Length: 388
Image 1: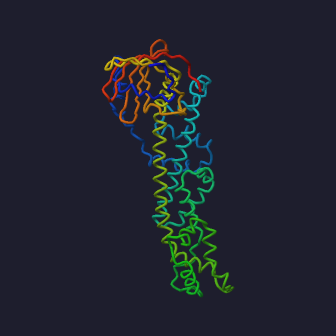
Image 2: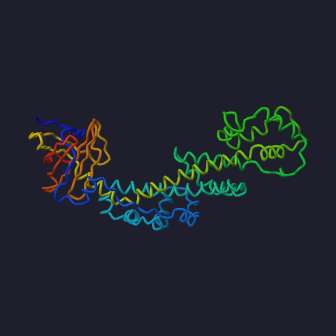
Image 3: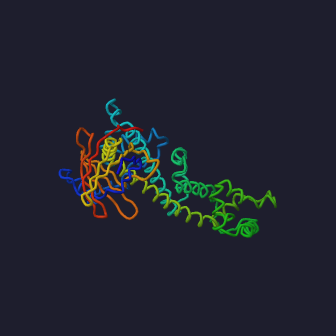
């Protein structure tokens, strides 16, 4: 068979690898599908309590990066990531390049997610306790931070939580516990009950309107009655507060607690994912270096021992992070030192290659096997350097 270019990196004639002699136990573990040791996460709730004031004060990416470097990084046992962030030497910047930029962004995301987790948890606790005064305090403290924390499309549940909290704290409870019913309340309440009977459900319900229009929409609806029947002697705010306290507040408090729970869960998940990403940063960096070493164009010679055939082809391995524009890629590429593991998956089968760099990274030699039972040897020779 003549040579042919496979930019997609798909080689249907070769497959699963037996371990190359000398490739090391680490590569054999990858081929066997063994799990890496599970990283033990830190006690996030305790750290959130200790750093609550600092997390509340963050209003920008710069402040988040500073807090991570000075407080959160050590507490979260992210020594490798912290060392890389604080190493500003020219040699380090040249060596790590884009990876360092990604690391900084990940540190900022982790700090923001922890701030979101703390805020959602605080709102949840206040809502469960029906502590409106506490909610007002949380709302005021969070105002400087919300523009930064809620930018973009992220943290949708937290955004809804804070909007709902603002609605709930926008109406003052002015003596609504008094047993005496204010003058005009019965007519006022009857009008609102008849005009807007649904507390939850469709767009016209109180809950849907509150989420859509916020405090301004709530006040507009509560004051709507007097647009048709002006009464100067009526204490409008007192009637509105009574109706809000009796009819609306229980539903709004329950919904706020539910939103805060979801916002807290969302922030916790994102926090743990970012922590794991930062905790594994050195492994990620080594992986990027390995993929960069493999990048380039290779002349591939495959000898199939089962069928006693030899095939030649050209493979192009793309730079790290670049997606192949014209076809599938290996399902897995692992480079550990000089050992290279490739797994290919295609309809009806799979393939694995186990290879070793030789000749100053200009050659690859190893073995293959596939799901059809074929096995043999592979020799690769680099014919062109890596290109973007």
